[in-house]
Image (cartoon, rainbow, N blue to C red; front, side):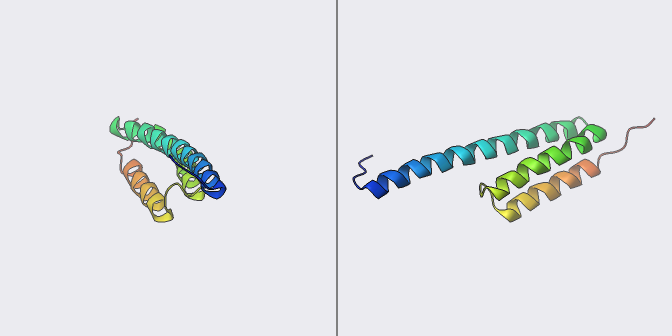
Length: 92
């Protein structure tokens, strides 16, 4: 990349740092969501509900850092909660 101005070089470095932060946050969020969806697929309601706060924390962190938009985070949280709540309770 042929960056000539000092400001353009600085801006490029900033964009690389921001991209790395965004990738880290989004990757963590997606990993947590995937773990929760595995619990939901396995029909393990207790484990899914226990994992929800950790998933919400990772989603909220991504929203706070600007990695994803607020409504996107809310949509993820709403849908995941709905899926986890709708699981049948295990018969004792």
